[in-house]
Image 1 (cartoon, rainbow, N blue to C red):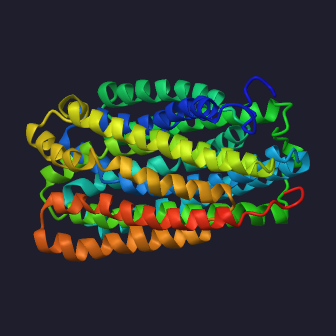
Image 2: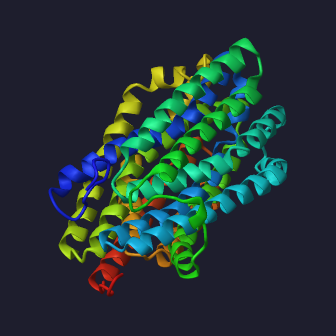
Image 3: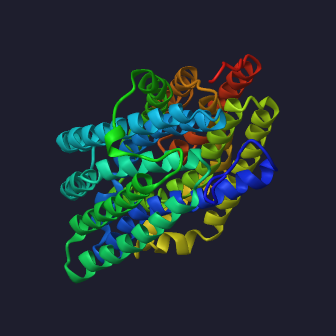
Length: 449
């Protein structure tokens, strides 16, 4: 094993999963810093209208990012499977096929997003005073989607081999550049939402170039070579079989949250701005927990390739315990420090008060999502994503719409809206768990995987 890689098929799982996940947590946080620093800078230095404009795009940013994360999860699972099975040809084909796939996906999402930005924001009932700034920010931000796609591709390949440290180093550099450019563009050049969007895409291209340079210069099994860029039909089918349902899952969450944001938009602009400020805790918590979901997929897939059934089961248990505990600690921590947290994004006391109403509900809700998301990740490690996608459709999309049209429609309070998260996670998690244990019992190890 090289010094940046990890053998997931031997040794202490408690220790190795933690070592694997901690750099990934910080990598995920730094990606979120791109957007949070945007919101913080415009909120502090460009005013509440600019804050509301950028915050109004958060779900659409999450949607575009989620589609790419879903596809890259297919890359991660298949690469880890072949590494565990010591199938060099399978790894090579997966890396080069997925590079082309992710590049095409990044370009497609960028083009469609730019064209549909105003239409979607209008359909979301974005406030008239916010929509121009929101359109400007999102269209510029989407120009960075190809870079985000290629970084996620590289990150998926490296994490499949157990290397989560070098992507963290690259994102650290990009994150520092992002914050510095945010302050320069907004405070010095007075560019407002345009400035923070430009800072984000410049940072994204820096991280993408660095990870691609690593893969192109590497001598490891997962090296990328320009002359090897060719799509293998069978590998592409296997990546898409895992990645497309995963991408749809992310999209379904985002679409369901579009309806939540639309419901928030029925309140006055202070509540919209408070929700935008408080919602910055969501990606902070989710993405730190998501490190254990990536670990769950990678460890289960590698051990499936190595035919280690007991380590597959233990990997699922350990990742679930870690992610639940982290979600609980972070949720409670954000509630305890709710005032300084919200002060990062706004100087307006009414906006802070509105934000606290969201944090008060979400603080003990985040940890519940671990049972749903870690189980979905475990099923992905087994190569199963279609049924989990259908369960998510019913439990976390259809259910949320029904909640909005019934419970929220009846009470019309912001708290009754926020409570839909924990209830949808609970019922979806229970169904996902039942499905995972069924398919785990039926696992059969194919020759050469």
